Length: 409
Image 1 (cartoon, one colour):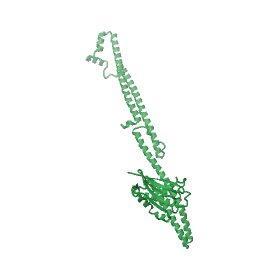
Image 2 (cartoon, rainbow, N blue to C red; image 1 turned 60 degrees about the vertical axis):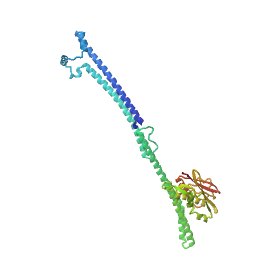
Image 3 (tube, rainbow, N blue to C red; image 1 turned 180 degrees about the vertical axis):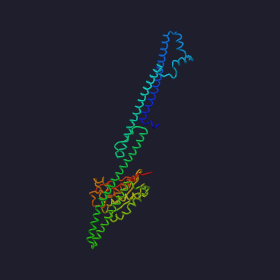
Image 4 (cartoon, helix red, strand yellow; image 1 turned 90 degrees about the horizontal axis):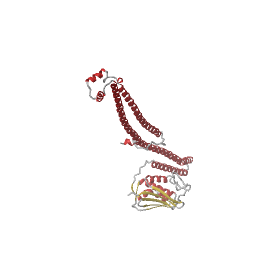
C-alpha cells in the first residue's frame, strides 16, 4: 500500500507490530504466572488441610484418598453448605482464593498500566513528529502566500503526505514563475513606455517649433512649405517609432503567433525589398538579389519579410551613394541561410555587441537616418520563430547580416 511508503508511518507500523508481539508475549507470561500462582495456592491449601487432619489423628490412608479423590457427594456438598462455603460465599471468607484474587488483580493492573504507557508513548511520539511536520508545512505555505519562496516543503521521503507536499511545491513554483513573469512584464511595459515617451520628446519638440515658425510667418509660402514638409517627416518618424515599439512589445510578450509554413526564399526577399527599390534608385544604390529559385524555408512569410526588409533598410542607411547591397541565400543539410551584405561604413568593434539593443545609436552613425528599432525588431521576429540572426562587420568596409533557420525534413 502507498501509505506504508511514508517513513514515519512505516516506523509507527513497525512499533505497532512490535507492541502486538510484546502484548502476546506478556499475555502468555501472565497466564503462565497465574497458573503457577494458582498451583502454589492450591498446594498451600492442600498442605493446610492435610496438616489439620494429621493433627486430629486422621490416618494417612484416609487423607490420601481424600486428597486424590475426584468424586463429589451430596453429603460433602451439604457439609460445605453448612459451613457457609458455596458459590455465594464472599471471596474474603476464602483465604486462599482471596490471596489468589489479590495477586491476580495486582499483576493484571500493573501489566495493563505498563502496556498502556508503552502504547501511549508510541502514539504520542508519532503524533508529535507528525505535528512538527504539519507546523513546518504550515509556516512554509504561509510564506508562499506572502510571496516568500526562500524555504521549501520537505520532500526527502515517500508517502501520501510527501506526495501532497510535492504537488504544493509544484504549485508554489508555478505561482513564483507567474509572479516573476508579471513583474518582468510590468517592468518591461514600464521600460517600453519610458522609451517611447523619451523618443517622442524630440519629434514633439520639433513639431512645436515648426508650428511656431509657421504661425509667425503665415504669408511666407516657402517657409510654410518647408516646415510643413518637416512636420510631415516628424509625424512619419513618430508613426514609425510607435508602430515599431508596438510590434516589439507584442513579440516580446508572446502576443503574436507566427503562422509558419514552407515559403519560397525568393518570394520572401521580393516582398522584403518591394518598397525599397525606389529608394535605392533615388539614392543611386544597387540592390542585387542572388540565389536559387527553388530554395524554401519554414517561417512566417509576412513577419520574416519585414525582418529582411529592416536589414535592407539598415544597409541603405549606412551605405554611401553608389553602394551595393546584396541579398543572397544558401542551403545546407541542416540550415537555410539568408545573407544581407553591404559595402557601407561597417560597424565599429565596440558597437557590434550593442546593435540589437533598442534605440542604440553608434557615435559613428549619429547623422544617419533611423530610430534604432529596425535591428531589434528583426532580431525579435527571427528568434521568435526559432531562428538565429548574427552579424559580421569590418569598419569602413561593410557589414553582413546572417539569418539562419533549421532545415526540417
